[in-house]
Image 1 (cartoon, rainbow, N blue to C red):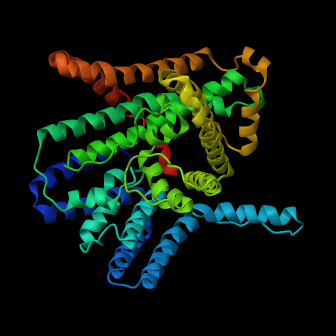
Image 2 (tube, rainbow, N blue to C red; image 1 turned 135 degrees about the vertical axis):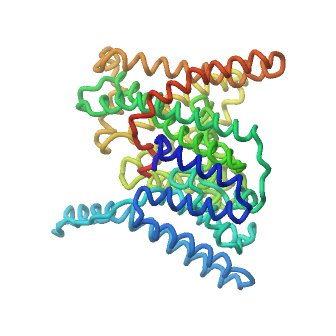
Image 3 (cartoon, rainbow, N blue to C red; image 1 turned 45 degrees about the vertical axis):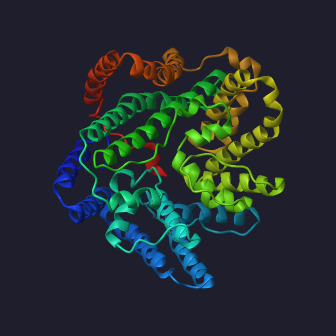
Amino acid sequence: MLFNSLTYLLLLTAVFVGYWLLPLRGRLSLIFVASLTFYAFWKIEFLPVMMVSVMIDYWVALAMRDRSPVAKKLLLVLSLAVNLGLLFYFKYLIFFAENAVGIANLVGIQMDPFVLDIILPLGISFYTFQTLSYTIDVYRGVLKPERDFLVYGCFVTFFPQLVAGPILRASEVIPQLVRRPTFSLTGVFIGVRRIIFGLFLKVVLADNIAPLVDAGFSLPTDSLSALDVWTLAFLFGFQIYFDFSAYSSIAIGSARILGIQFPENFNFPYLANSPREFWRRWHISLSSWIRDYLYLPLSGIQVQYKSEGGLMQATNAKQKNFALFMTWAVMGLWHGANWTFVLWGIYLAAIIFAYRLLSPYLSSFGNNFCYFGGILVTLPLMMLSWIPFRAESVSSTLMMCRQIFIPDSYLVLGMRENTYLVAAIVMVGIVATYFVKNTIAPWLEKNHRGILCTAESAIFAVTIPLVLVFLRPISQFIYFQF
């Protein structure tokens, strides 16, 4: 069941009506059943896979109570083994099997290719990380285990964020599930507005940029010029940003109309003034998860339990550099079982490493220079990272990236003129939207609220018809494949 479908809107409407009419226990039962129904619309046979993860971690967390440190560690290992074992089997077994065969043949050991027919369960990377964070927090003693299975089940399977995030923490959501929120028209209005905004990002922007991206990446790699490569990097960067932030916005809005608040997952990442700032603004729930449960432990730093994104620095140089590259290699593999994603992660680690080396010398240039200069440098570097994320192979990635270092290649245009124009218009639109949201809108809110309300009404008078027109063609969200 896709967010950009009439089926989902009908399910959400039914849950909304029932949720506010039922008592607390009935609400939880409704959410749990609706979540399982939502997931079953994709493939009902994968429901048991998700429920194994849910039930194992529920039992493990309860079993950790009043246990010795050794026993708690063994229980945590069990949780990690089950969850990561399921993730490895469904997501990575084919990848590692194919690479094992390739290496064996390379060294002279003849092996036939493995024939494996494994389907990746929808959202397994997301709900695995979510339930693992719960057991790890219980093990660390910062969270008490939830005794009510229905509450815990709702936390893991809550349908708005089940298959593509945001990746929630138990401490953020469970307290909201166990209380009975008061119905608020303002909350419903905010939620509906977020849903409409998310649908606009998906069906009007992302889905209409997608054909340009697909056409560009389908061209022979050696026919692309440097300007073509940069344009495709920016266009796919826009597509994946609109697509994934759309999902996050719809998820946040869907939860909000039920009186539940999710943390934000995106905050204008393409206007970040450093690589570190970019990851405080992009997929915030994932970068904060990776920080707290992988990077900080590898760095030897005390874990901080916050939902802001970004990666902190360790104190030991060798340890922090090891943690940086290891973290980003894992981050790459998390996104997909392909060497292009590993290359993506290593590239980003190298960019962050270079920024760490240079940042002590940047303060002497002044705040304005560092801010605007940082944006002008960070934007193309981060956009270039989308080439391996979208390319079919490492060789294609390297061939495309090679073009940007050939001066003569900047004199050729290999795609239709409107492709470059769309990329430029979208970039200008992002900057203008950021300026309006963070400068003009707050000023109007303070001095001319009536004008602001009129402007918002006009925007939605245009947005809603566009959403209705483009809602018909159904396309899957990009992050469903991860």
